[in-house]
Length: 459
Image 1 (cartoon, helix red, strand yellow):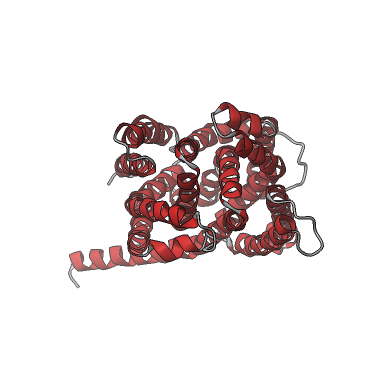
Image 2: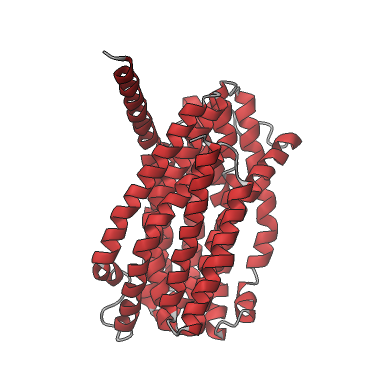
C-alpha cells in the first residue's frame, strides 16, 4: 500500500479510536449533567403548577443562587485537568490524586462560607434590584432553604472529577438518577402537602432540592469509600493536612474557570432580572425557554468535560497531536448535536412549552406565545453555544483558563447584553430583543474560543 494511503488510514483509525474514547467517557457525564438539570427542572415544572407568581419568584431566586453555584462548580472543576494530566504523565500516585481531591474539597468549603452569608439576604438583594416586593420576599424564602445544597454540590463535583479522571463516570450517573427520583418525591410531598407532609410551596421546593443534593453527596462518598479501585486512594484520609502549592494551583486554574462560567450564567441572570422589569408573563416565558435550552446544553457541556480529561491526558503524556485530535473531535461532536437540537427548537416549540404550563390557567396562553418566540432565537444560539463550551473544555485540558475567561466577559457583557438591552428598550422588542442579544454574545464567544483552540493546539 502506498505510504500516503497508510498514513491516511492510520489517521482515520486514530480519529475513530479517539471518537470512541471521547463518547465512551462523555455519555455518562452527559446523562449525569442532564440528570442534575432535571432536579431543577422538576422544581420549575412543579412551581409552574402553583401559578405564574410562584414560577416567577422561584426563577428570580434560583437565578441568583445559580450565579454562586456555577462559580463554585468552576472552582471545583479545576481539579479535572490537574488529575487528568497526572494520569497522562503516569505519575498518579495514590497520594498525588488524593491531595488534589482534598485541596479541591478545602477550596470549595472556603468558597461556600461567604456565599451562604450573601444568599441568606436574597429577598433584600432582589428588592434592591427593583424586583416586585412580594416576588422578592417569596424568592428569599425559597433560597434560604435551597442554599444548604451548595456545598454538597461542590463536593459532589470534585468527586465527579476524580472518578472522571479515572474514566469511570458511570457511578455519578447512577447517584444522580437516584437524586432525581428523591427530589421529585420530596417536591411532590413538600410543595403540595402529599404523603402527610405540610404544603410548603416555595419553601418546600427549596428543602426538597437541598435534601436531594445532600443525599447525592453521601451516596457518592459511599461509592468512593466502598469501591475496591477507589477505596485504595483513601481520599478522605488525613483530611486536615494542607498542600499549599497545590491549593494555589487549583485557585490559579479554577478562578478563571469560575469567572468564565460566572460571566455566562450571570448574563442570563441579568436577562431574568430585565425580564422581571418588563412583565411577569415574559419572565415566566423566559424561565421556560431557558430551562429547555439548558437541558440540551448539558450534552455539549458533558462532551466538553470529557474533552478536558482527554486533552489533559494527552498533554500530560506530551502528545500534542493526540491533544489536538481530542479537542477537535469534541468541538465537532458538540456542535453537531446542537445543530440537531436547534432544528427541534425552531420546528416544534409548542409541545415543549406546554410541559411547563397548566392549560386551564388563562394566563398560560400569553406565556406560551412568548416562550415559543424565545425558543426560535434559542435555536441559533444552541449551535454556537455547542462550539464555545467544547472549545473551552478543550482549552481547560491545557490548563488555559485566563484568556478564555476574558473572552467570555467581553462577549457576554461588553457586546451581547448591551446589544440586547438596546433591542429590548430602544427598538421596543422587549424580551425577544434580550434573547437576540444573548445569541449574539454567545456567537462572539464561540468564534474567539475556537480560534484560540486552533492557535494553542497548533492546527
